Image 1 (cartoon, rainbow, N blue to C red):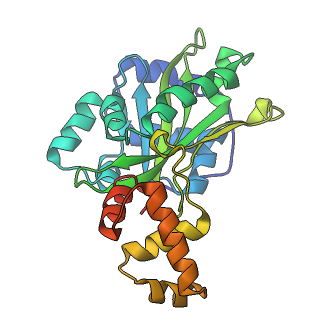
Image 2 (image 1 turned 90 degrees about the horizontal axis):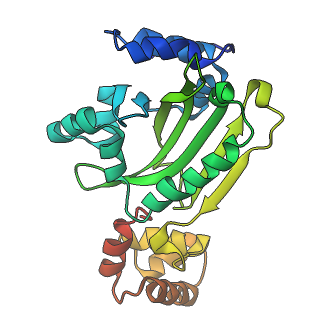
Length: 269
């Protein structure tokens, strides 16, 4: 994808008929044109997106997605890639961790409806929606993903027929598992205040670790013993033992191996 340009425009609705006609053989130039000329898509580049996609809201399938980037993000094998092509958003949703899925389906849906109240249909492309969640990969590992998107309204009646968005791998920059859902307004809607909601994964509501506990969890997962952790964090071994005891109680485990196995499946470590 070429470097973005700083300029803003019209509605994405001008692309609706072209996308609906499905007579496009190469989506890259059209996608690049949309990114370069539209404020919301332009802003997505600040997060160094890994994957760009266009999806049909009627059937949930991808009209386009950057295939090699999607393969790298989710470590897709050949079967996974074929499912992504055939099932689109439905397959991508199936990879989201069960504890994060309610936030994507329920909380995001509720926030979206609230954010769109009173907004003319033809201006829906001026709202950037975003949510982060954990996704399983085809190799069994877990990654953290930031999904940003906006709607493409129909040029005639303003009805949202497609969405265009990006996926960014934030595994290395997001240490916690909190899910933040946002709706941000651009251009003629810029006076609207952002709508933001932060929730915990469903299986971790009540399983909340402090920043210090998360530090110790990560060091335990690396194989460090109590004395080594104390030295590394400049605290006493007794403090480490107290934190470790609390961590084990919260996670309902008795051994470090059990802790690593349990929290590894959630993406905490």
